[in-house]
Image (cartoon, rainbow, N blue to C red; front, side):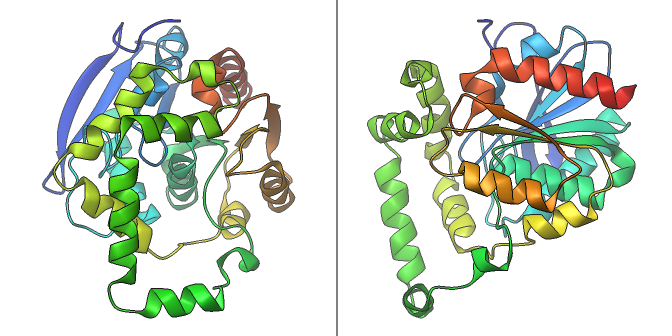
Length: 286
């Protein structure tokens, strides 16, 4: 497979006073923006960018708080990342785009597609995160009590963060969420491990841990006016097939593709995802 370092240019820009990172490849064709998931970065699109760039102009963005972007002490929400993406698309790309997002990045892409339809040609989601239906955000009484106690969230998030900031633990987690563990290599582990040591990384983790759930996916699906592609790794233990079917029920207009992969199909099975994205963009563009 092609390395992420080939034919991909790296850039930085200041957004709202913070340094943010993005990469770009490709000189012709429709514009695609790739958005990573929680704890990941532009590096997670290592097998997608060079291939898609053969006939598309491809950008990938490090969301504020992740990857090579700064990690300031701000409230981390879907709306924050939507604003970052909106300004990036309007300032840098300057035309409507196809958005492709994995997990948390899928949620950010969906928020963008709903709130910025003038900049959106279509939204493609890979094992999208976010609450689905009113039951998904109904608080458990025990959790409600524990999280009302002073300092509980800070202590819990600190313990979890420092436990996970370990190469071996990262590898173990990836083995759980990739169907084929042979796709979990040193480069992938390092791409997640390295940003976890950046200044402010723990603050980002704690802020996301404490942040409210935000708008539900069913609400967003009902408001989306652009074409939607749902790609779902069926071996994902986090975002399960049952969850995917709930999403499809709330978005019956979506094109749905089931993939023999785990939580990150784009990295585990680029041989399936890249052709799907390419065909979908072509069909939407007409």
